[in-house]
Length: 495
Image (cartoon, rainbow, N blue to C red; front, side, top):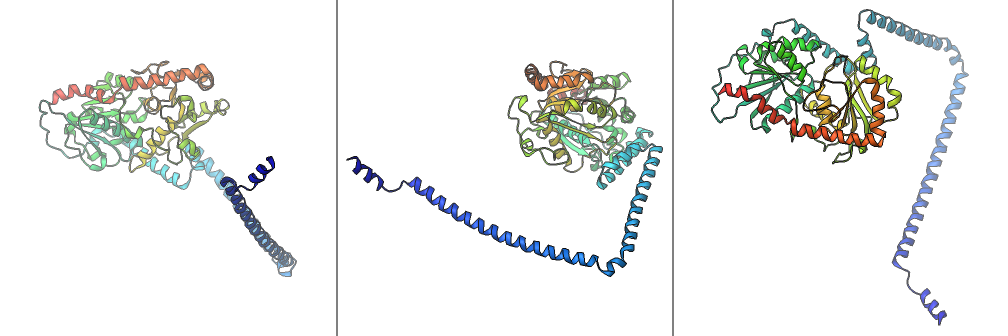
């Protein structure tokens, strides 16, 4: 009985799965045979090339033993000597040029030239021309920048009507001032005001109730800014100062302050200093705007000089509410390579080498990234995207002056929900050190970086601090609401 069962089972048809596997094995065997045949053909071709190479080598050996090769040997040696002499002269000329540049105080330019391409050198020349133009402007009176057309007075605002704003930036200026202008324009629109965005290229003012000029120290001297406004518009002109008091550009902006009705400043201490000088001034934090597209977190990092070293998994990474500890970049910094910053990062190199750091220190005095064209969109998305992928955004002052670097600390740090680690700053409401960001002396920073990146308690504390800063930004630093409050007294006077 068992023998019959065994015989009958052996005669059953082969299962479909087994049949498919056998078919796949047959196909694989055929592919393997084809591969071997292709390999043999390639081997034969390789042997043929080797034979040709040996034949050519034998010809070369025979030629080198010939009479003509022997006769021309001195000429070839003379050519080699001439080439060595040219290289030696070139090195000597380069050394002499370097010495001359150092003696003339142009060491920085020499360093930039040694690491820059021809395109960068051309940009540097353009930047030097801009800086020279602005330096000359510092010695000129502000009236020389108000050569625009005189326009008719605008009628008084009617009760219940909203004023119309125009926000200005210069297309030849630093790209990040356009970013600020875009932010203000978006905030005014969200606050319910009518707002237009204008540049120096328009050649004149808009027909608006209020004119808000971002970075006056660049808007008027560069491009066509000098021909945009007339002195008669003083009562409708408002400035947003962006410069630190210890810089030459602040001195240039200060010369224009008398021609504005009011000066806003994104730094609280600088606003107080302007007010103490006798001008109408107030602090305007560049706060949160709910749907400001350039700071969106849902975008790949574009490939460029700042991101080409990052892997595709980092460029495609999304936050989507993840914990801070899951971000792929441990620490990031983007800024000008001042001696103070360069010394800090050089000294901290041994501590930072164990982390995934993205540090971009741009040469001092390099041409500012201009705001014309689409570059602003690319650079802003890149800067914001790097911060959105960073656990820590570090802030080092450019020099010994304490300053609250609003753009790096708030817009590129707190807004992007990173932990901000900064040198001691001038405390600026509504943010509080220790609750919304971390501040420390330079020599304490390497230890704090280890604490917030490796210690379980530090990792939890970093999560709490970055969430607190973001909530403060959204709830107490809402830019549309701040603009409404800032303009109330001026709107009352315009009715």
